[in-house]
Figure 1 (cartoon, rainbow, N blue to C red):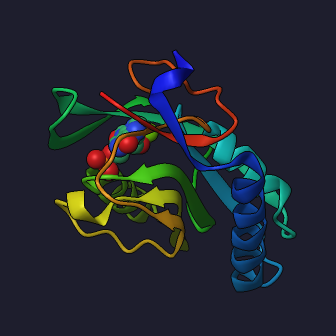
Figure 2 (figure 1 turned 180 degrees about the vertical axis):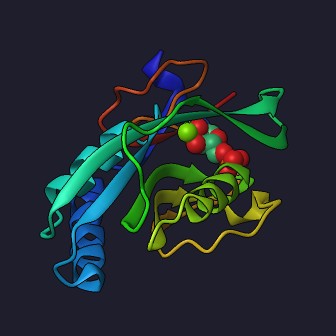
Length: 173
Ligand code: IMP
Ligand code: MG
């Protein structure tokens, strides 16, 4: 099963990169507490590791969204499957996402949290595939910019498989 997966970023590389992201985000927040929104399920590993590397007070909240449409092409419409537990009104929000693909998910979340009265909303994505973008999103922090390949591991799945791989790999499909 793992034979079809080629390692792109090792566990050690990802750990080092997340430490850098955590330091950068913390420096920008300048001691202010942050409402860290983990976008389920893909960002779960990333959000937890990022939280561990942040030096400001972190409140963790979880949201699950899904795009209408088929697997390969989303329609751009996003719906909330599980909402946050708490209000983001007046808070500094940091969205932790696994990967920016079309950009539709983060575009939706950004507008949603702005509507809810967040003081500001930052985006931190472990990966970005700019070649696939349909909607531009202002991503403040990106772990790695990658080409248009399908990746799995470190929270990312293919048909709900491979999320638990400790590295990020390219899946031959
Ligand atoms: P989008 O930016 O709204 O198109 O959606 C991004 C979501 O699509 C991510 O949160 C992932 O769940 C999923 N996704 C996009 N590209 C990949 C990939 O290469 N591997 C696994 N999931 C992906
Ligand atoms: Mg996802």
